[in-house]
Structures are given as structure tokens and as C-alpha cells.
Length: 517
Image (cartoon, rainbow, N blue to C red; front, side, top):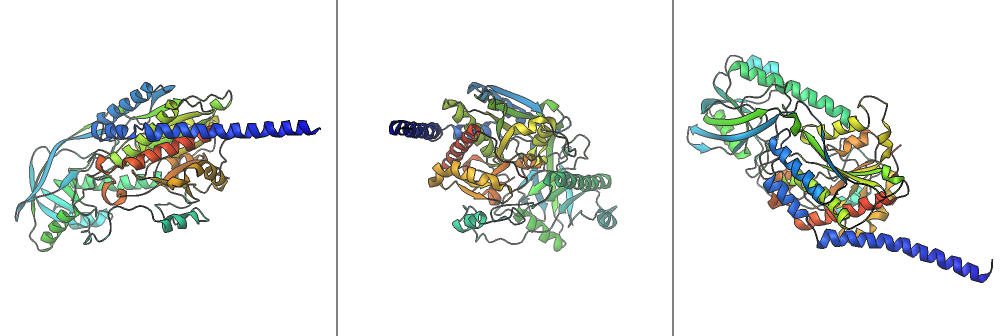
């Protein structure tokens, strides 16, 4: 080979390398321009929160929000936008009006909100209050209280410990916390950044836990009804004055529904408990007008797709997702309107940028996550195979990755790798252009209790985003303060733009992301 040939080949390879590099750089520039300078993410979360929140599973409000999301993606020019049903017997429940107050020994307005799927009171009711510490040992409760609960209001649970609010309510992860997570060498059991279920079959265990939980609650509710009790009041230690009424989880048509059941503020609970201890049993006046109904058509996952451009690779899919449902006492802004809005914005950014990813990019907005990942589980069983069977459908092999967002509205700080060491250098390279935003921290750790667990169960690379907690665990999570005021715009813009860049790069890879062994 003569010198001119060598120069020509060298120059050709150099130009080719630069062209490839420039193509990636240009793609990310387009994504950045669309995500940072033309962002619509706050418009999306405003709609989800103020107009279409809350989005309780099974409700008409949920379905209205789902129709809005589908129509929005159609207007953006998504190649596909459609619904998939996930539950035929999950009931809707809505509050029309309610009030709770103490009338004796002195008047006190009780800060309260009803738990979901509880029955109406049939008008205003008045009763004396008694305290039951726990219903875990139902036989003990029956022995102590059998024949004594007619017309009574039950104060259930232990009084929260005093909280002087010395600790900050809102925090970002410290550099030390992030570094500790990055240095982890095993995926479980301890996770310095958030909850971890350890190396367990979470989806299988979740089914057992929920079944046990429902059996215990059903029996207790049935006992109270038979005894003629009027209502239950409980609390969660969210200070100051925050109400945390997640739900009774008795959403299926076959479940026993509770008598009117209210979450109250920890401060109100403490006073009521102290009065009972002094044998000054409070008299409670309340009413609850609520509606239970069954509309299976409300129970849908919302799916949208950008079809890939690769002749063969378009058959493979990069999935992103967030749960679309929320609890009912507020607008579901941080849990999980923020995650849903970010993932919708990811799809908009990629489409509006004019990019043509090789693989198909699919968004799934899940229903029923708060009741045990109902939407994502139903989707997986329909597309990938039954949970407790070893046979898997071919579609499993076509999913390159699933990326989930469900930890509030805080900024992305990195990715939980769920024990998948092989993806670490890939993600390091993909996130390096955004290192200046401090979003490229990777930990081998697991995090659990949301929809990516389903994909992990099927051995599809499933990942959850590391996010700053802000006040998610102290103020907004499942509370009456889960509202738009706690959603920071800069964090949302960063999350949507960086995830769009990550997803696009995964879709452009020559091969799928590595699976776990």
C-alpha cells in the first residue's frame, strides 16, 4: 500500500469518526434546544395537577385524564396512542362532601380527609369516641370490645411522638450520600438513597403482602359493621398538620368496604388520645357523602409510540414509563403527575426535534400502581407471560430497556442499576455530556416498590431514576399537600431533557442493553 492510499484511508476513517461523533452531538443539541428552550413540561404538569387531578384508580376523573394524555400525544404526532385495559373489577370512588368535628368536651374542627373506598355515613352521625391501639390481633380486639362498639367512633393506632420540626422538611441528596451509593458493590440490602427490598422476588412477595393485608382489613371492617360502630379515625406522623389518607386498598368489587374511615392530622389525633386517657371521652360529629361505582372502562394504561426508523431495529423497543394514577386528597402533582409529565415531555422532545431513532420508543402511563402495580403487572402478563410461569413470550426479547420515574419532582441525580453491572459503562458514556448538571451518578443498588420492579422480574433491564427527595417523604407523598406548588420547574426541565437524550441514545445502539444473568 502506497503512502497516498494510507493517507486517504486515514483521512476517510477520521472523517467517518467525526461524522458519527457530530451526529450524536447534533442530536443532543436538538434535544437540549427543545427540552431547555422550548419546554412544555410545566404546562403538562399544570394540566395533570390543576385540571385532571386527582386521578384515583377506577374513577371517572382518572379516565378523563387518560383521554387528555392520549389526545395530547396524538396532537404531537405520535405514531400510535391507545389504551389497554388492566382491571375489570377495580371500583371508582369519589367524595361529594364531608366534615369531622369534636363537639364535647369543647368544640374542635378536626383536620381530616376520608380514606379511599370507604362507605358513606348516611347523613350526619354523632358518637362517643373509644381508642383501639391495633387491629392486628383481631381475636384480642373481639374479646375486649365485642358488644361495646354500638354507636361508637373508633380512634385507631398509637399517638405519634412529639416532633419539634428541628429537621429540614426539604432536602437534596448530599455529596456524601451520592458517593456512598456510587461505592456500593452489592445491590442489597441497604440503600443509602432510598427504600430497597433487597434481593427478594418483590412482585411475588407483593402479591402475598397485599393478600394478607386485605384479609386482615376485611375481617376488621366486617367486625366493626356487625358491632354497629359508626366511624374510624386514624393518623400518620406527618408534621405539621399534614393529612395522609392513602387508602383502604379495598377497591375490588368483592372487597369488604369500610365504615366511614378518616385520616386526621397527628396533632388532632394526639389531643383526642389524651382526652380519652383522662376519661373525658370526646363526642364526634361527622358526615361523609361518597360514591362507589364500577366502570371497568376507566381502568386503562395509556400507551404512545414513536415507531423506529431502522428496517430491523424498529421491531425492538425502548420503553419509558410512570404511574398515572394518584391518591385522592390533593392533585397528585408529585406522585406521580411529575413523573408522568416528564415522560410525556420526553416523547414530545424527541418527536419535535425531528430525530428518527432506530428503535421504537414507547411510553406507558400506568394505572393502579398505588394499589400494587396493577397496570404494569397486567401489561406484563399480557405481553410477556404469566407471573408464576417460566414460559415467556417472544416480546420479552424485543424490549431493550425500561426506564421509570416515580420518586417525586426532584432533580435527576443518576440511575439505580438494579444489580446490572454490564450497563454501567454504557450509561456512563451516555450521561457524560450532562455531567455538568450532576445527573450522571450510578449505583449498583436496587430501589423498589414501583413499576420498574415488574420489568426487572421478567429480566428486562428495568431502571428507576435517582431523584433528589426534596419534601417528597416529609410533605407531599400521599398527602393533602401533593400539589403543584411543590414542583420545581428547573428540576422538571432537566429530568425531561436528560432522559430524552438517554432514551434516544439507547434507541440508537447497535445491540440491546445487556441483560442481568
